[in-house]
Image (cartoon, rainbow, N blue to C red):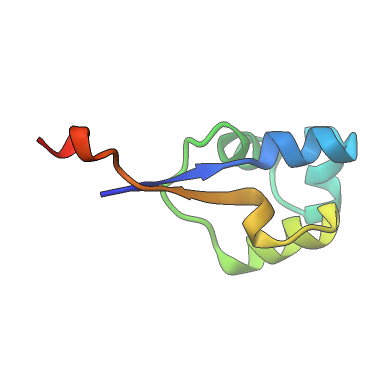
Length: 75
């Protein structure tokens, strides 16, 4: 099974936005955004994803990337 790679850190850096600033704009606790930024989550609410996209002026695809398994990993 493939995996989803989170690119929040890259988008935040491109927008020169700190985690504290994003937290204030989105209305989500700094700790929860930190987990999202570091990829330590297993799910995200669409309402949170929408708020992050609005704050960063980006598309969900800018934040999420699908990486398929390598064929050699399946053996």
